[in-house]
Amino acid sequence: MIDYSEASGPILAMIHVDVGCLQDRYRVAVRDVNWQVHSGDFWIVAGSHGSGRTDLLLTAAGLLPPCAGQIQWFGQPQPASEVARQSLRRKVGFVFEQGHLLHDLTVAENVALPCEYHGVQRAGSVEGVVTRMLESTGLRAWADARPAALPVPWQRRALLARALVLQPRLMFFDCPLRGLDRRHAEWWHETLLQLHRGEFPGVSHSVTVVMTAEEPPTWITPGMGVAWIEEGRFSVVTSPANRLAG
Image (cartoon, rainbow, N blue to C red; front, side):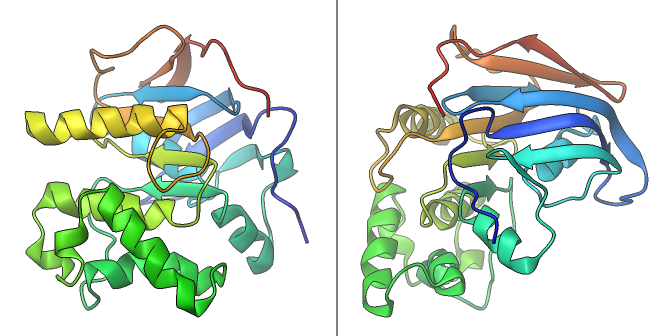
C-alpha cells in the first residue's frame, strides 16, 4: 500500500503533463505543464473562462486523468488501485465552485460522508467532528436543512466543511470567490488565509492552498505564487516565497 505522507520535496509535481478536458478527456486543454507545489505554498492560478483552469485543478487533485505526462503527490506516483486512491483522498481536499452536495441528505449528513466512507472516525465521534466543522464555517443553523434550501454561498461553505473533516494537507479551491457579495468574499478571503496559517478552527495544521480565479485577486501578498493559463499554456508568474519544509 502506498503511503501518501508528507514528502521532503514537492507535495505535488506535474511533469510534462497535458491536461485533458472534463467534457472530453481526450482533448488537451492545457499543454506541457511543469509545476511544483511545496508544503506551505499558497498558489493562485488565474485564467479566463474556458482557459482550462478547472481542468488543470481537477487533474492536479487526481480527479481527472492527464492525457500525457506524470503526476506525483507527496513524492509518490499516481495511484492505480482503489486503496491507494483512498489514501491520497485523505490527504487532498477539493472544493468545487458549486454543486456536488447530495440533495437527499442534510447538510450535516453531507459533511459526515467522508468520515463514514473512509472509516477514519469511530461512529460515536463523527457527530462531534461534524458539529465543530459546521460551527467553524457558520453552518450550525443549517445542519438539518437540505442543500437545496441553502443560498449558493452557504452551499459553498458546506463543500468546504465536507472537505475539511478529513484534515487534508493540500487543498484545491475552484474559483471560491466568484459571484459572492462583499460579506461572503471577505469571509472566504480570511478563511483561506487562516487555513494557510494553520489558524482555522477545527483544523489542526496549516494547509497548502491552491485556488483558481479569473483574475488574480487584489489581496495577493508577497510570498504567494501566481500562475496564468492562456491559449492552452501554463506559466508561472511568481513563485511562492518562504516555503515551509515538507
